[in-house]
Length: 437
Image (cartoon, rainbow, N blue to C red; front, side):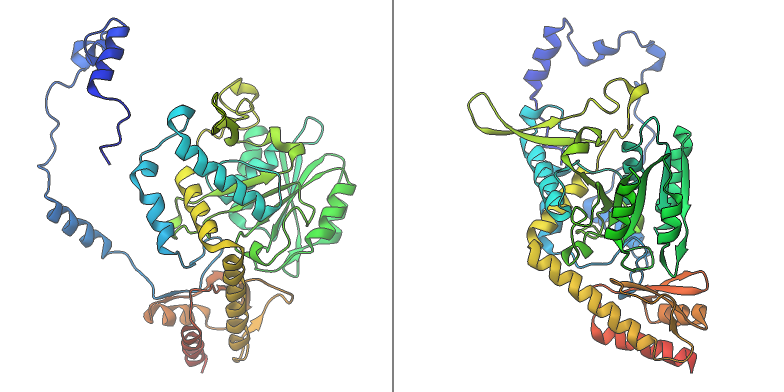
């Protein structure tokens, strides 16, 4: 890690001489002498590599690692191919920061450009940014980017993820704008309520597809209603589901956002994750965050540069449409490697396997006494069940080293991905059956 230093000692000394200084301390000559740390820090002696390994292993043993995870709700346990872990761990990527100096950052810029290209292919959109903090942030940034002076109200589906709703509320509180939640009916966005709420002051409508309960919304019909009212349509999507779904562009979205964690990022206690954003050419100049563009250098060779940054915090901060000042470049690289490794066929296979296993689990659990699917309709890989003794069931599964579904309003929100085997699902059903017997 320490070897990635772009300048030599001689070059650094030459730079100091160029500005009339002899040593680095001269840069801080206005700092009072009493503020300098001229003594060693009171730190314990360093450990050997073996001792460090032992200490870290002891800490790691305190973690609970489940054999199977049947919980989603925004973070999903997918299989991560080895190459997806290997490439982002290379020193050149781990040590790199913001690529402000394009001449020295062509590799990082290219990796971001490839990621943006893949997100555009996945969503059907024309342009993607270089990512934001997470999916909820991406949704809130999208709501902010499409707002104008006359339209200051954002509508958000009550069937969206609760964390997304709260994040959008927080953003709007900071800008003194209004959020109105569209009621959910039978687990999906209430179409009649949406139409009634589409007034002239509404700037955008956010809908999640599939939604928090795993159900597929009638996204295209909502897009038509939103556009007829003169508002813009923001669609939050699961990137794995896009392996079998229509693209957000084909469903009528003006902006596509989502959580990129399923694209090769481990669960990791909730982070770091990745928020992706993509839009059409019409709204390109309002897109927050960083965008990498492709050009040619003075010799005609392909080169990459940062583009379209003037709309955010670098210039006229008080008038910026966004104050996002960093990105998730290493996570974006990971997602890019995952998409490249899987390809369209692989992504489709993951989506189909996840959906099939979720439907199998749902069908088997619903055969048990007292267990019922709360909301009918097509769903992806999550579903909400009403079931008796939910706490006892989850505790029994925990004893078998299985993380069961998420307790939610008297029911349990279950999830299955391609990673869980049919044998495991059958074992889970047997445990639930034993508790309910």
